[in-house]
Image (cartoon, rainbow, N blue to C red; front, side, top):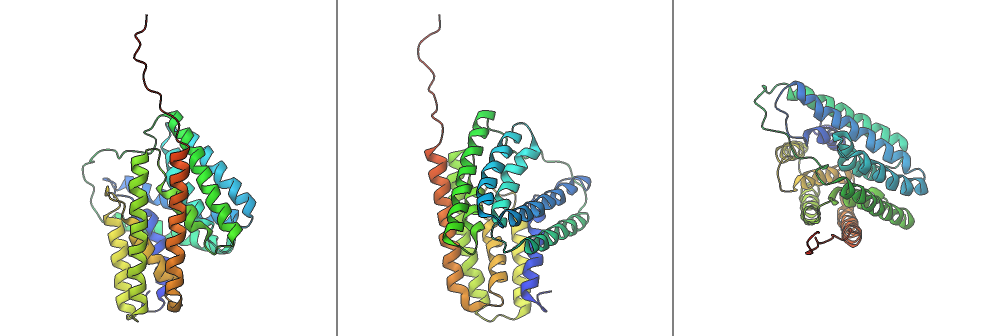
Length: 298
């Protein structure tokens, strides 16, 4: 598709990312799960575009969604998915310019998820290597507290973005919600990883687009980005955002390469703001840990 329309090719690449970023399940039947996660991602982006029509509703909605999802995540895998995947993508959806754009992108992601499922059937089944850890591993009290903190961070970013009239309100909101985790050490690693990934992915995309590369080269680069995102989805290193940022920047700059510098600083600064808000809210509001008493009972 990139040989005809680079921008459309980037949209289609984005469509397969949610499903492709889930490690390939062992059995063919279990590979329906990434497609379901892709469908949830599509619905979340659409919900974000709906909320964006009313800034006050968007700010309150992000907070309420986080609190409800955190309570649902206690002992429920689907609730953990709502907290770790759907909530950040609702935040990302605040960047979408209209409900119609949200519906179109949701349809593309849904179609890409179905396509990813069909492609996954080409690989034979294999013995299972175990069940991956879920976000719901912390205790119930910790998760509920995390929901309030994540909701507050998302609401601050969204409210600030709307108040300043930012074009992409979801960049800071999504960054904050994507890096936040109940464990401070994990959040810190994700925060550092995300800002590095965004800078690297944006810079590589800008270099490609502004160099006047032929459509075939851009097509190959998009394919490589999707493959790399898929290959590193299960890594302990948080590197997937470098490839997703690369694709998003190809989408944004393919028809407007003269906006490269503006888009770069916009993305980096808003991502940095979201990460900073997540750090302040996450660490400042962490509940105090009680130390066990040294006195003996009795």
